[in-house]
Length: 192
Image (cartoon, rainbow, N blue to C red; front, side):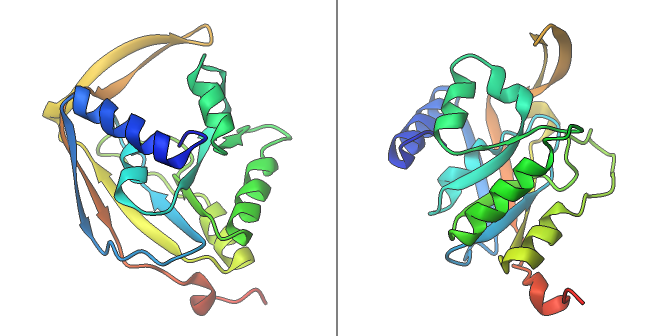
């Protein structure tokens, strides 16, 4: 996810090794080459940073703007071409437009269709962005299920941008990724 794909993979591998974390990848892992949209569930504590290690292509994540304000990490996200999402502002459309541009260039986009983290056991409706991007660019959607067992999660309290936040983070142990069957949306629908 950083400027150099090779360096980012080395950094992520070291990060997971130091924390004694692993990820089991299963499902339809024969991902299509070129442009694609990886649509993931955003569960408590799951770290989608395993994704770049599970695939050949470099994914470009749609990430909320607050993450880009974190010292060092924010700069690395910007330098690596991650996409800033200015939620609920007049600039929100910029993320959609940037993602579509990357897809037209044959790149991989990774996003959370619900648009926010979903607490364990809850379901909320997905937004339409992934399907609209697919229809506009012809890129297929690859569903990806993410899961971390509760015993591998640690509850953390942090102060971010002057606001107290609570959440879960995986500090050690195993997590799981399961790729679903690729969906070619344009073959299912048409813009009439």
